[in-house]
Image 1: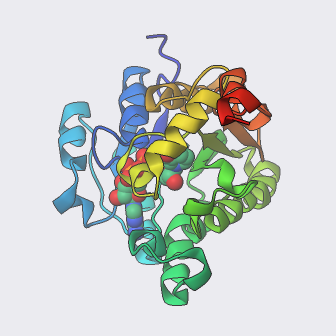
Image 2: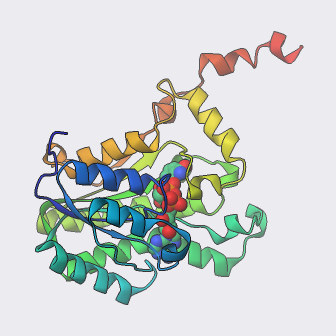
Image 3: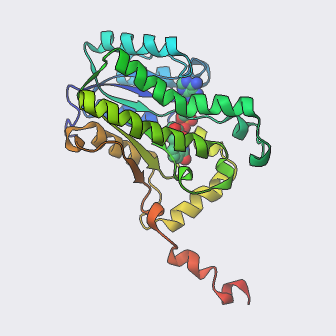
Amino acid sequence: MADLLKGKRGIIFGALNEQSIAWKVAQLCAAEGANIVLTNAPVAARVGQTDELGKQLGAPVIYADVTKMEDLEKLVTESMAHLGGTLDFVLHSVGMSLNVRKKNPYTDLNYEYMHQTFDISAMSFHRLMQTLWKHDAMSEWGSILGLTYIAAQRTFPDYSEMAESKALLESFARSFGYHFGKAKKVRVNTISQSPTKTTAGSGVGGFDAFFNYADKMSPLGNANADDCANYCVSLFSDYTRMVTMQNLFHDGGFSFTGIATDLMESFSDQALGK
Ligand SMILES: NC(=O)c1ccc[n+]([C@@H]2O[C@H](COP(=O)([O-])OP(=O)(O)OC[C@H]3O[C@@H](n4cnc5c(N)ncnc54)[C@H](O)[C@@H]3O)[C@@H](O)[C@H]2O)c1
C-alpha cells in the first residue's frame, strides 16, 4: 500500500455485506491509511454485516437513515468528534427502489414508492451535502463521491425509476459541486460503475443478462467492486484535486462502445439463419 490517504478522515455509507461496493472502498481506505466512520440504514444493523466490518477495521458504526435530517446531523457531528476534525472524503453508496423491489412495471408505477425511491437514492445526496455544508464539516480540498449507473443517460428498461434517481443524483453532484468548489475547494463527483454483483445490483430484473451483456460489450470487461474501490481511493487522494462536477464512467469502456465484435457475430445473417 502507498499510504495514499494517510491522515485523512472520511465517512463511508452503504457497506451492507462483503459484496457491497462500499465494503471494498472502506477496506481499501483503511489500508491506505485513512481513519473512517461507517454508516448504514438502521435496518442494516439487523440484516447486514456493517458491525462486523467496523470491528475488522476498528471503525465506529453510526447508523443513520439517509431520509432523516436529524440522523445525518448526528452522523456528521459525531463523526467529526470521533475522528478529531473535519472530513477529507465522503462516499455516498446508497440506492434502493421500492417499485423495483415490488416488481411494478415502468408503465404502472406507484408514486408513493417513487417519492421514497428518489428520497433514498437521490435527494439523500443533497441532504448529506447540505448537512456537511451547514456544519462546515469538509476540509479544504476534500472529496465527495456518489455512485451512479449509465441508465441516467440511456434507457435500460428494467432499471425503472432508478434511472431518474441516478439522473437526479448526478445533477446534484454538479450543482452542489459548484457551491462546494467556490466556497471550500471541495470536489463533488459521481462514478458511473459497471453492473456489479451486489444486493442492490442483483435486485434489478434480469441482472445476470445486464451483467453479461455489459461484460461482452466492454473492451476491458466489467469493472468489479475492487476496481471501483481503487477508483474511489484515487478520487479521495490528492492526485485528483482539480476533478470536480464530473460524472466519471468506470465501466471498462462500455459507455463509448457502439458494438463489440463478439456480439456482432451473433447478428450476422448466418447466425440469424437468414
Ligand atoms: N451493483 C451495481 O450493479 C451498481 C452499478 C452502478 C451503481 N451502483 C450503485 O452503487 C451504490 C451501492 O450499491 P451496491 O451495489 O454496493 O449495493 P448494496 O446493496 O450493497 O448497497 C446499497 C446500500 O444502500 C443502503 N441503504 C438503503 N436504504 C438506505 C437508507 N434509507 N439509509 C441509509 N442507507 C440505505 C443499504 O443498506 C446498502 O448498504 C448504489 O448507489 C448503487 O445504485 C451499483
